[in-house]
Length: 349
Image 1 (cartoon, rainbow, N blue to C red):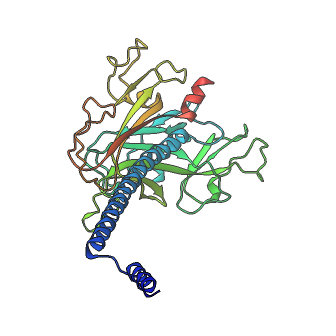
Image 2: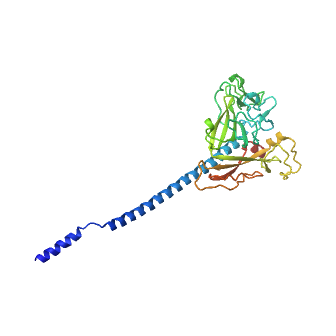
Image 3: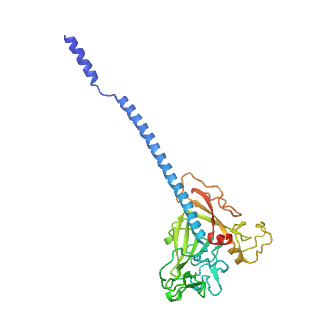
């Protein structure tokens, strides 16, 4: 009987015995290995997520930049519902012209400004703050697609007549309402034709987004807009490092581009042989024949990536490619063709 009790007590003591030091160390080692593996996995996922966010920002900025330019290009040359551009002569205002008399409209001479014009890097442009020395400049001119009920003082407006009894086809002025007396098709003085504000928008590149105190160093696509008699600039898309515009010229007036050139103002006979005999001596006429543009932008990430070395070159359509930059930023070229609907459409009709 006593032997049985002693044996049972021994078994109870063995069951209550704790783990040994060796077992504890093995358990801690396994736990540390698991924690290290989890930490490594978390770190790798964090890096992947960070790089994904950088790439997503780059893609979004590049595509957004093209979309904003495309929308403006498609509206270029809209001078009211009367299509006064048909048969009118064209003028090329100065890049930073802000006075209403210098914006290219003249009712007496039936003159309207170029719908679109471009400038090579190095152009003098005091109205474009922080303009990068290597930036091309693209200018879009039109009037607002939304008419106003009454003119604001000092703001230039275009009023196009639809009444055959009106003396002038259009009025362009920044005076009071008395200057705008043109009528609609009903020829009723109580039904004046629509007033549309003049719009001038200029796209260019700057070396910074926020440029005060030395700037933040983020290359940015910016747009300057004529507002209240002066140009106001704002950022459109960060990370846009380079931009190149090629101009599609319609040489046979059918509305379709026959060739693309970097500068319509010069003789491009060698590059544009599709329509023999075209006269390249009139630079203003060449610009007026631009019906499409091919815009290429080089967008980079806003922050560098560890271990990244960008040694590639990027073809934006120039004779010389951009890069290599040999830094830690990731880059991609985005390109799109935009059509000047208000110019090409009239030719198709």
